[in-house]
Image (cartoon, rainbow over all chains, first blue to last red; front, side, top):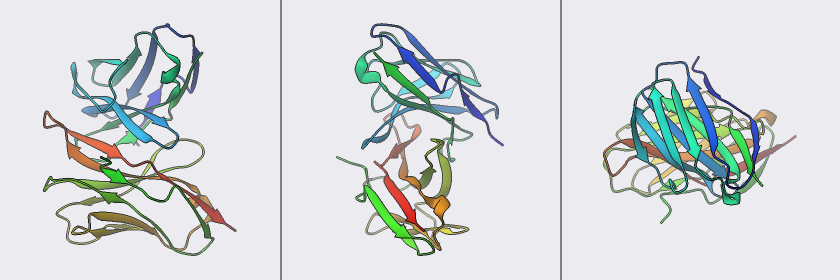
Length: 112
Length: 117
């Protein structure tokens, strides 16, 4: 079974802090994705990566950056957290770009 | 403009009845795919079913089937014989190409389904 893990289930940070969200998959998938989920808005794509060191902006990349130094790990970085980045963050991976995506359990981030 | 539209924010259905969750999409691509995911209260996203734009038959997976009407750009999820465990949030998503030619998913806003005993 594919396993996608995220470093924390719950995270509380202060405004202005630098925040790292980590995602690891164990099935040698090429593609990894970061979404945020907000009530009434569904899932929105922040960034995705289709190969090591390769990335592409999603629909809402402002205020975020990403890093993929190894195939199994995809990090989401909030350079200076703001209260409007309080959300549920979901990581996903897929073998090929047109395959179904497998999701991690999510990180609920609160920025105070 | 919304690319994936789910018009039912919430639905209540009696146990054992069939339920249809609506999804309409907007794309000018010839090649695309539609996915349905389930998100129980525990939060994990579970893949349910997939339909490719060139697939001639409607996709089925156990109690799940996808009513794909290409001309109407709709891809409704049908759950037969609903169970209490089907209570969850359901998301429709479309695979489409990004500006750089990579594939990505665009999700709808979801439908919260509640099964009543």
